Structure formats: structure tokens, C-alpha cells
Length: 426
Image (tube, rainbow, N blue to C red; front, side, top):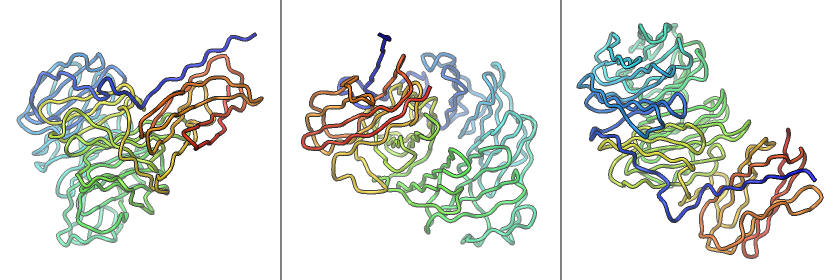
């Protein structure tokens, strides 16, 4: 008989240990930005020109100070080089232990940096500032902006603007390739380019004067923007239409990061004021909250290495890390239907190989059974059999030496029963 190895791992619930651990950064500066190039190597930046480097997944951090400016954002283009953008027009380059300043051509505050490729990079900041580099960050030029007509470069008029001065502060940006990207900022402003910044069009995401602080896309169609007063908007058509999501919080949300865990599924993490971290593991239709050890310091930057391994940075030199997806989510909100009953979600990715995740939601404490069957109805495994508290749970199912085919998983919680199909393709 063929050897069968099955592994179920509880991802989302643990009452014993904290799910977000506070790493020892060795500094007390407010930390603003974080970026990793792989699971080991990352850079953190913040107030007082503080730069922190790790090459062992945050076990140790080397500290540097280059400028008195606040470094707001960081992006690594390879394992040895990263760029930081900060106040007073500061662009700082770190490469192999050498720190230097790159001329920006502006004294306006710079708020975010992003490289869609090793050679092409963009930086956004206050007063309509959008900078672009095409030589790996060694030189930057400003994307020109005409205040009088609310036009960028080649005369493409921007519609839907209510800023008579024609001056916008941009706080976030994301590019899916060298040419197509979005910026966001004051007054719920979102702008998109499809030609590398030559021209831009304005997109509408409701009305109001709240700030959009960060934006991220998983592909050309699906993206999420977050901002003041708990605002989360989602698009599935490249920004032509944006739909507000129920975040269940009213505190400001400052940062977002995502990771694609399969061909379809996407996990987004959002950080904000009062140590708030929100998470969705199905692309944004269901959100839940997680807690760090602080309700005082804001989460200013966040970065996903995988859907389970995430770093977040905050005030007083705090660096938080989770390796199990941040633990149980509470205050669950569903943007397609209210969660007023037990629910079993479709596994993701599906089809899968070699692993997938199975999630379910409990509205109250209940005795729970989760079973997996093959296509003949034979029981393969029962990873859950006992009482669980209310909350959203996520289990990782790793199969080895299983044949390709159709499998079924069944959830029983009190009188609730539901079965779903999953497909293993090798």
C-alpha cells in the first residue's frame, strides 16, 4: 500500500503564546518603513534617520544613522541594496554597508518608494511630487505637473478633483510593472498611469476629505487602498470602480502588504493606529482584526514575506513579527453577507499542490469536527475534534503521496454541517 503522509497544522488559534512577537530592535526611534528581499534579509527605517538591517530574519538588527530627517519608506531592489525616502526631499541609498544620499531635486517631504523592477523606481511625496528613476535609483527626475489645469505631462486632464490649488500630497503607490501603477493621497485621491507616468487619470473612491495612506494591487485588476478613519476600498477592475469594505474600525489605517498563496488566493495585512492589524485571506471579502502587545503605538509599516510570515514596525523602536499568520482573527466582518451563522469557506488555493488552507468561522463556542474524505467516501483524517471558541480558524493541509483527484472536507459544529470539494492536481 502506498505510504500516505498528511499534515494538518492549526494556523489561527493559540491561547498560550502571543502571535505577534516584539523583536528587540535596540532603538527607541519611531519606525516607519519595512521591506524584505527574502525571508532573511530586510531593512527598517524611521525617525532620526534610523536604518536597521537584518540578515537572519530579525534575530539581530544592525543599526545605522545617516540623516536627521525622518525616513518614511524603504524598498530593497536586491539582497544588498535598498532605497529610503524621507522628509525634506531625502533619498538615502544603502548598499553593502555603505550609506549615501541621492539627489532628489526637491525639498518636499517624500512619503513612499517603490521599484517594479531593478532599474525602474518611483517615489511620491507632498505637493504633487512624483519622482522616477530608470537607472536603478542612481538618478531621479520629477514627473511634471501643471497646477493650473490639474494635468500631468501630456495634457491628460484629471477629472473629479476638488482641490482648487491643484496641490496634492501623495502617501502611497504601487506598480504592477514598469508602466502601470497607482498613487494615493489627500481627499481620497487615487491616480493611475499606464505609460510610466507620462499621463495620469483620476479614479473615484467615494466622497470625502480623508487621506488614503497606502495602496496595493495583486494584479492589473484587483487592488485595495486604505486610509483615515478605517477606510478600506477594493477594486476588481483596475480602479474603474472602487467599493468600500466594512473594516469595523474607525482608527486610521496606514499601511498594507499582501502575499499570493496560490494561483487565486491572496492574503492582505493592514496596519494602523493603536497597534491595529487587520487581515483578509480571501482577497478582501472577509476581514478580521489581530492584536499586538501595544495599543499605544501605531503600526506604520508592514511587509509580508509569506502569508504566514509578516513584519510590522511601530513607535518606540518596536518591530513585530509573526510566523503563523498572526493568530486568531476577531471582529470578523463579511463584505458580501453578514456573518450571523457558522461558515465553512472554500479552501485556497484550489486546485492545490502540495498544500492548501481550510478556513471556517464559529459564531460561538461549540464542539467542532473537521474531516477529510477521498472521492470514495473513505475518511482520510480528522484534524479537529473538540471544543473551539468563537472566531475564524485556518488549517493548513499538506498532502504527500496522495494521488491527484477530488477530495472532500466536512465541518460539523453543533447542528451545523457543511461539505466542500477540493482538487489535488500533481
